[in-house]
Length: 185
Image 1 (spheres, rainbow, N blue to C red):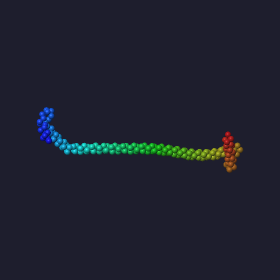
Image 2: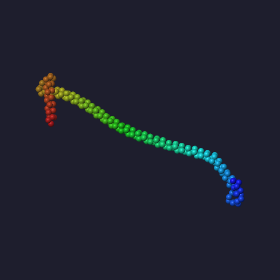
Image 3: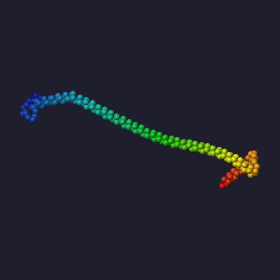
Image 4: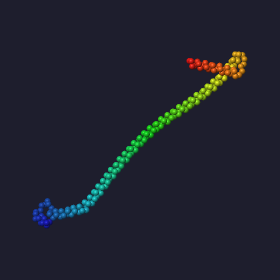
């Protein structure tokens, strides 16, 4: 069959634009051989390289997705921790304010109790000093009254029990009259 084609091609007149028929046949044979070699050796190696690169790219994409998901989880966990810390700080502030107010109230109560105790001691001390002063004044007034009575009577009154009782009764009557005037006024 090939020889028939070659003979038919030689009988025709050759067109200057077309190559000779033997060139077409040998070119076709070489092309088929190269196509077969390319399909047998080059194409499988090329497919293998493309598959490896595809796997690497897909693996890289999966790793990137996994890392992105991990970053999102980390960000969410950080946000939750930040919110929890803010709530805890608010609770601590509230507790501290309450404790501060309680400490202030206790200090005020303690200061009021201390002031009341100091005032009570001062009142007691003032009352004791007043009673001592009144007693001292009563003795002095009694002595002066005895001296005055002695000068009025012209004789010296001795410090006997009766003179002392008379002076005390007189002072008590004066105090009663003064108290009656204050309550009546």
